[in-house]
Amino acid sequence: MNIEYLFNPQDVIQTLADNRFLKSKLKNPDKDGIISESFPDLRKTQREIYRIITNQHYEHLKILLSNLDFCISCGWQNPKLLQTSSKHEFDSLVSELLVATHFAKNGYKISNFDHNKGKNRVPDLIASTDSVSVVMEIYSPRDWDGLEYYFEDLRLSLLHLDLPYDFNFKLKSKLVRNFDDDGKLLYFDPWSFSEVYTDKTVRSQRITIIVSEIINSFKSNRKKIQYDVKELNHNILVKLSIGEISPNKGNPERHGVILPPTLTGYSPEGMFLNLVGKRLNSKIAKRQTHSIDDCQHRVLFVDVSNLGYITEFKNPYYQKNFAKSLVDNLDKNEDYIDAVIFFQPNLTKDSTIDILIVFKQESMPLIKIKDILGHDIKFSELNKKVYISE
Image 1: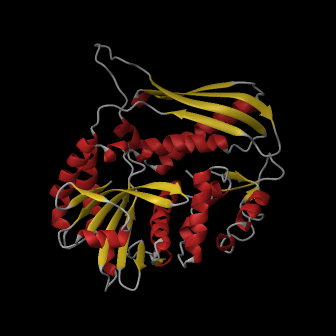
Image 2: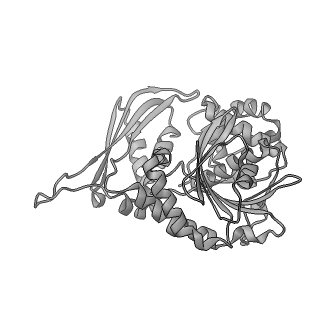
Image 3: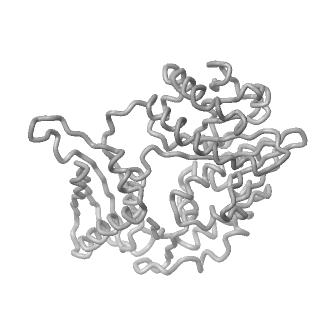
């Protein structure tokens, strides 16, 4: 779903003044998008980058924008990141930016190929020094794309309603039925829900209907709005409450809380095995890193921040299970990839990513991993091919 984000052009211009390399790529924000119908000083655009630029009061987004400016200054070019209106694509491109920033801040020359990709299978990033060269794919998987984007699209659509009101809202999920007619316990199935709403068109149509009805409720001048989203085929009821509604034609003040469905009935071990055995193997088998000759190391970086079991990557029990899945499923790819590196974002002034687990082929010494990631990272060995950062 392509959401129209409200923005104040003067605020954007002020933010870009502190990011001069990004400013050279985003010209004339006062003419970008279209004029807001409700706010005289605002415009609206579907470009995802404006969602980051207009939320610089969040420290991690301020750092992210600074990282983007820094990478552009280093010669990194990725027009898609600045132009895309797809949140799914934007999230993946942000993961690429994080890895690019890591290498640029460690003295590597960085370049990418997205602006020349077309239909060709090429890697996402190449980083090199006088002595080391690394060609990379960066992957940011999700367990339940449709589920997560359903709630995220609904949240952002509400925050950016082009209506002259301030308000707060809360989205709370609950089961429609706890038991069937025979007394059997019922639950919410995230897989079936996600399968339906992974389809962007289906998701957009559903949320458009919901938002249209919310808009009609605002137009009836209610001081409080209650709305139930019934997903009966999935046994889930989403209750939307909107309060503290007050007129405003300046910069809107809105805040929202989401309480998604409780997820049960899955194991992190099984989820990780599915990720490695199917999706990572499929990604590696495309051999995108092999389109570049004369490169020393071929690496797949995996951003785990959108998985449903992030904390388990630091749990000793799960680390051992994850290590076994990696060895059992990635050994056959020795000619395809040298290492698979799992990370999560850590947007601070001193860091961009935290390394969690490293799988390396025996042909790649650990010292080479440290050359790539930095010699200040300490590793513990789980087996001859899998290491965790301490």
